[in-house]
Length: 233
Image 1: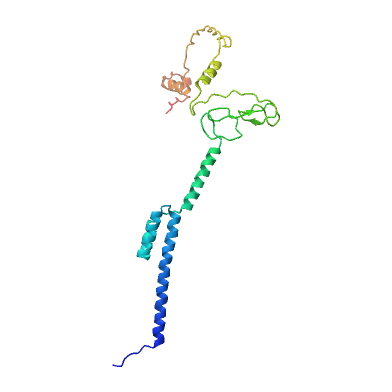
Image 2: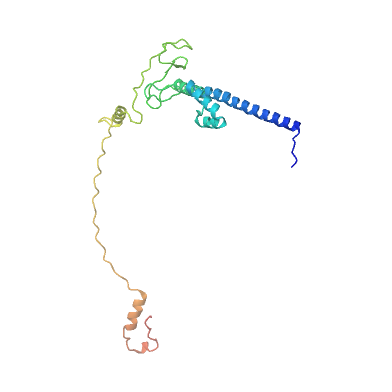
């Protein structure tokens, strides 16, 4: 059999191709190691965990990278920091909202009384009518001294004030002076008894005709010309 000779340029081309593929694989392997190191540093502060993840990718290559994807933390440290800032901002907003000192319910800054427990939240200037804080002793708008308003004691939400109900009930009850006197009852009128009149029944026309028909006629010359009436049916 004749020997098959491969041209030298083909062998040179294959060698260059294999060298390029090997260099690419080595670069890819190093890139995976570097990327794993950076990504692990972004997701964890534990240096031992970072080194372990990098070593796993360096030994097993793409399979180690697949294992790292399964075991790495789902969020980065920067995302955790942003979430913590959002939570702190939300808590700060909740704390900045004014609350009633009596029932701890959120109220508005323009309210003077709490609608739930009727606690005084702010005073009102008697001169200019602006709202004043309870700690202020003078109105900053017009310079009038602030009058101390008596705040209503806080009551439990949903329970009525028994003392106020008793006071209103006592005011609504009539006293002996305001209670109207009962009017005297009228005397009964005398009853006049009427004697009943005798009741008579007048005979109707058919009854009279029937009686005349049943009565025997008198015999005489004047009755021959008149016919005898027949009883009604």
